[in-house]
Each structure stands twice: as C-alpha cells, then as structure tokens.
Length: 83
Image (cartoon, rainbow, N blue to C red; front, top):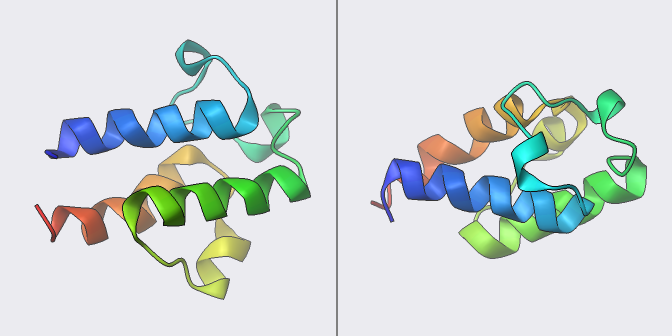
C-alpha cells in the first residue's frame, strides 16, 4: 500500500471506529471537536489503528495524541518503512 492508500485507510479506520462520516474528518480533526472521541473512543481508536497497521503506539504517543495529524505523524513513518 502506498502512502496515499495508507492515509485513506487511516481515515477509514478513524471514521469507522468513531462512527463519524469520513468526509467530516481532516488532519486537523481534534479529540475535543469529535463527540465520539472521548477516553473510551481514544482507546478503541488506538487499538483499531494498531490492529490495522500492525503498529504499536508508545504510552507517550497515546497520551500525546489530540489530532488526526498527530496520529499520522506517529504511524506514517512506521508504515512507510514497510512499503
């Protein structure tokens, strides 16, 4: 999967996990602006991304993530190395 496909898949995982239409999401989407992205939603999202991309977030990353852009910054370098 190329970088564009990986980003598309990441947005799909976020949309499905948080039950939010994909077209409403952007890199700037924030935890505090998406009702479903509460503490439980955050853990479910982290687990879904780890499962889909065979990637493990560090505790620091999990705690720090507040936007989709921050998820991309964590995940994309790791999955890009596998391409």
